[in-house]
Image 1 (spheres, rainbow, N blue to C red):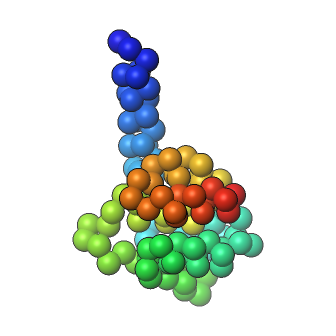
Image 2 (cartoon, rainbow, N blue to C red; image 1 turned 180 degrees about the horizontal axis):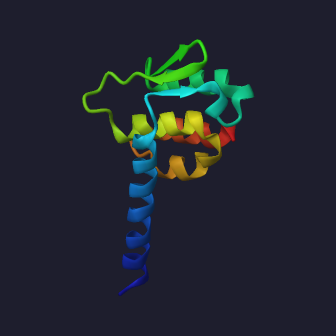
Amino acid sequence: MCDEDKSMKTKQPRRAELISEARRLPNQVRWKDISEFESIDDRVALVNAYFVNLIGMNNGSVEFCSDSIPPTDEEYLAFLWLVRPKLSSKIAKLITHNKLFAQKIVEHD
């Protein structure tokens, strides 16, 4: 097996694992369960700038509010980044349709 084939095999499970993790998040995440909460306003603004109205702010929680049926993988990944910003470099590698958003989340890190 060539190196390129091995690389593709290892990337696919990582992609699937990260998207699966994003899809397992509840639609509402309590503020106390959000990493780096002190910068949540900046992250909400960034996500909503690239995925219009994807994030709702409630009293004590944030809400995943996708208009897409079903939600896209990139919407799920954006929500995962909002909740777990330390995953920005891994998430950015999986964002394929919105490269500017991917660049911004890495810069935000």
